Length: 98
Image (tube, rainbow, N blue to C red; front, side, top):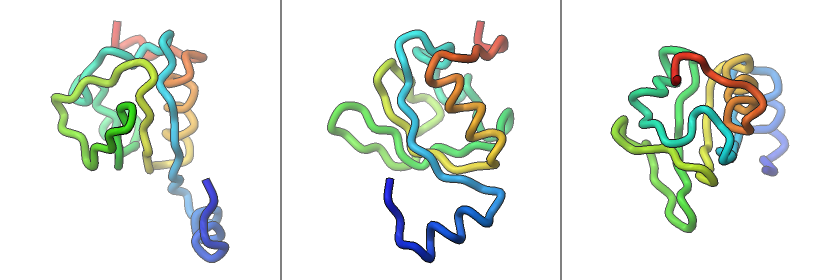
């Protein structure tokens, strides 16, 4: 994702990051509601947009279910964003979702 140079520099200097992630079929977060995922409390990550196919859902409700191939535009702490990227890609599991 390309940002205006001033905005890109501000993001680079901040501890907070914005990222786009795709939920893989093997991800432990697939088929769970945002309520169960509890991204903000657990990881300091907030979902700005949920993309389902061609539909863009701003500020998705806690009852919405995240499915494989959904895309999320997120913001949060660098550490939380990086961990969510790993989980969404199926490279790391979240045990609490069992």
